[in-house]
Length: 396
Image (cartoon, rainbow, N blue to C red; front, side):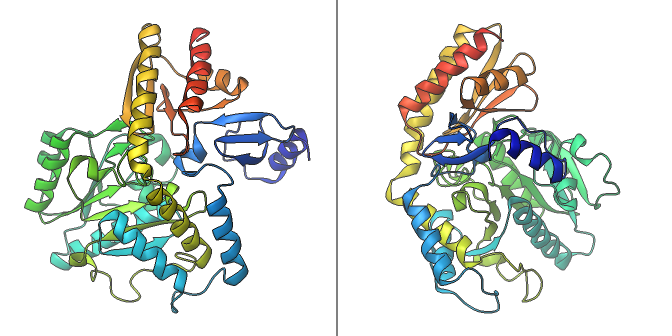
């Protein structure tokens, strides 16, 4: 099919919940996507921080193909060899003792909050409140919407589950004033992604950790977007040296295959008894093959260290653009290959101009050009992206 046909057929039958650009992709290679007519696009969105190894990575393709020929799915009432390999590797790279596999970031956060709620009410029936941050994003299920600090995502879905409160991200004093004995968890992103690429400070996370300890509440980090080497560490909590009690993951951990989950240390491993939580498809054989292949590749290639160098180079180039266009760019922020260029007005025009030139980026929080390329990106590709951004900003 050509692009016009693909777009027409999709628009006719797909539920109209996405605002899509009129581009139809058929395949990808490395950091490039190709539309139905063969035009190449340099992808600096990476499926929204998902495609850690880019497109058609030979290790991932081989792992998925071989696993599909052996076993695709087996109920979690049985054991599989590939799940055993995957769960051990996830435990090693996350630094946690126990792991649960789900299918998405929303499911991961939902499971983490269920664990926190069960932990809380086991101490006191009134210990059920979960505090999260304004401008956060944790998913689109009812409870993850209730925990998401963007009002517009919640409009029209009430009444949402009770027990959620919000504080301003980074404001330790406000959190301290909000904490009480009814709080069972604080849920935070160490680096806010959807909210505009806002990294936390070490002092803030240390303060949050101390407050959670004081009130016997769990500290949950949502590392769905900032995890899996994206920040320059295996997981962003390692940047700050402040470990949570529960950590969620998804996006990059499957290299493009849908996988999510959360992990805890042994201390909280038995909050759930058998039957308290589960998933039909979570931890299926193909998902586990994707996890094992992706993490093994990132580990063998020392990708976290490479992301530090690439991120430093990329950020420096973006800061040069900011200096070149001080009337248009407010600041550049982020860690590793999770970077944001905050503009002085809404940035949709920049996204469209880049797309026309063959560069995929997106705008979040209205004004922030979010840049999350595959972790395999090269300096040459970074230079290509920066050159196109330069052209887009010149016309902005």
